[in-house]
Length: 142
Image (tube, rainbow, N blue to C red; front, side, top):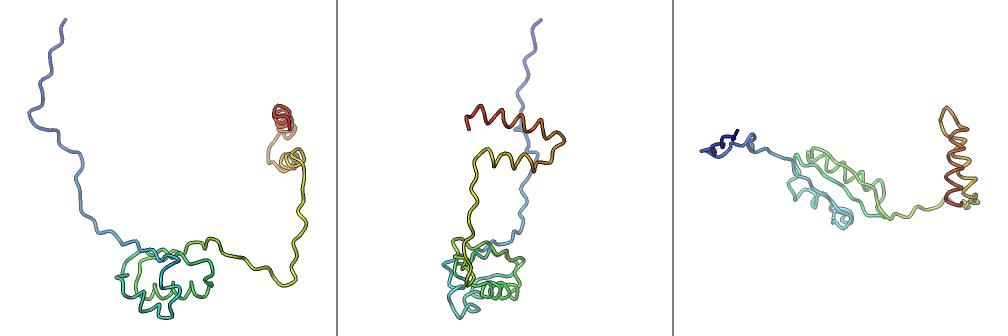
């Protein structure tokens, strides 16, 4: 029995969605090269942009102190930003305390490291885990 051919639609299909304009918050990034970090006049630098209601990301330079980051953050909160997120400083040098020495680094073999991990594992059958791990180590030739 032959099938009937389906008639083509006379009107184009309607979209099941429609666009609605939405007011979005501005996303502003104060980068490590920005004048706000080096200038003593950060207030005038940071108040030249329309900050009200914006979301601000602070990316401080590596040598910037915590006090300076907090001062810039408080200044931005004072100009009515919606949120301020301080990101990590990359490449910052961590100074050692006076008189601090490097401790000896403990070295161990792969088998010793795996054994300590097996011993600290939170499993019901540690012996089965140990047997499985040793089997894998033997296959890899470690």
